[in-house]
Amino acid sequence: MDIRDALTRARKESRPVRREGLRIASDGGTRRIDLEVIPVRGPSAADRFYIVTFQDSARPAVASTAGKGAPGKKAELSADSQELVRAHREVESLREQLHTLIDEHETTLEEFKSVNAEILSANEELQSSNEELETTKEELQSSNEELSTVNEELQNSNEELTQANNDQLNLMTNVNLPVVMVGNDLRIRRFTPPAEKLLNLLPGDVGRRLGEIRTSLEPDDLEQAARITIENAIFQEKEVRLKDGPWYMLRVRPYKTWEDKIEGAVLSFQDVDTLKRTLDQTRTFAESLIENARESVLVLDGSLRVALANPVFYKTFQVSPAETKGRPIFELGNGQWDIPKLRELFQKITTHNTRIDGYEVRHKFQHLGLRHMILNARRIEAQGGPQMILLSIEDVTKRK
Image (cartoon, rainbow, N blue to C red; front, side, top):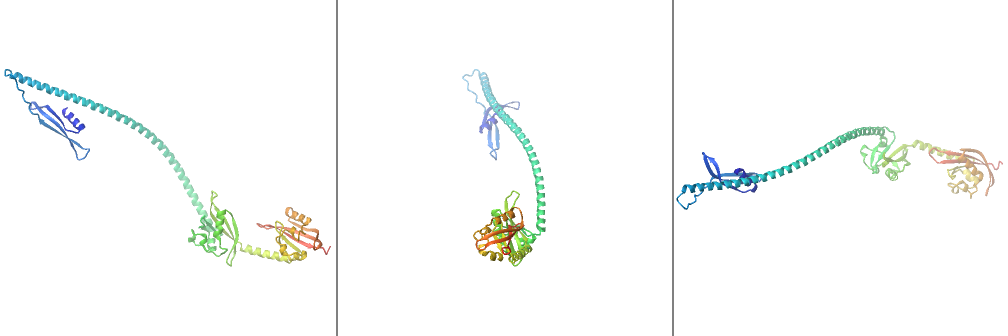
C-alpha cells in the first residue's frame, strides 16, 4: 500500500515522495526501512520512469530516565510509545491513502460517466451516420441507375451521330453538285468533290477563310456573299461564271442548327449555262420577231409599264423610245392612251382571261386624228419570273 501510494503521488505531483519508518518481515523478525520514489524522464517527453529505493531506517535514540529504580519498566514504556506513534502514523497514512483512493475512484467514475456519455453520443452519431450511409447508398444506387440510363442514351446518341456522319459523308461525296459549307467565322468546314474542281480547292483548305481561296469566278466575291447571308439571315441568288467559261447560279443559304440558330452559310452552284444560252437565244429570237412584226407591238410588265416597243409602234403613233420605255401605257403621249376600252381590256386580261383576240378600239388621238385599231393581248407568266402582257395593235383606219 505504501509503495502504491508513493507511486501515485509521484506520478500526480511529478516530485520525489518519501515514506519513513516502514516495517517489513525479514529473517523471522521485523526490519525498519525508509521508502523513496523518484520520477525520471525517459528518452521522449511521453516516457516516464520511477526509481524506487529502500533504505534501512536510522535506529531511534533511547530517551534518558530520571531515576534508576525501574529501567525495565521505562524501556517497556518507550517501546510502547514508539509502537503507538508508529500505529498513529500508519493510521494517518492509511487514511490519506483511503482519501486518495476515494478521490481517484470519484475521478475515475466521473471519467467513466463522461466517457460513457461520449460513447452514447458517438453511438448516436454512428447510428445517424449509418442512416445517412443507407440513404447515400440508396441515392448512389439511384444515381447508378440514372447513369446507366444516361450511358445507354449516350451510346444510342453516339450511334445516331455516327450514322448521321456516315450519311452526311456519303451525301457530300456522292452529290453531283458543288457545295461549300462555312462557319460564322467564314472558314471552310466541308465541300463536295464537284466544288473541289470548280473552286480549285484542296483537302488542306478545310479551316481556311473563304476569302483566301482564289477562284476563277466572275465576280469573285464569295466571302462577301456568305457574310451578308450570315449577318442578315437572308437567301441570296445570283449568276456567276468562270472566266470565259460556263454560267452558274450561285445560291447562298444560312446554315441553321436544329435550334434554329445560324452558324454559318451553305454555298451551292448550279450549272445554268445551257439554260442561259437557250434563254438568250429565245430572247433574241423574240425581240427579232417583235422588231420585224408588221403591226405595232408592246410588252408590258405587271404594273402596265412599257418594257419593250417595236419600231412600227414608234412610227405609227409618232413617239420616241425615251418617252415610251418604262412609263405606264396610260401616260403615253400626254395621256392619249388612257382609253376606257383599253382599261377594260387589261382588266379582262389580268383577272379572267390569259388571251384576248380581235378586240376593236376606236379612239381619236390629238395629233393623229381618229384611229380604228384591233388589239390582241396575251398574258405571259414565266415560271419563277414576273408577269408580262404582250399587246399587238393593228391599225385598220385606212381599211375602215
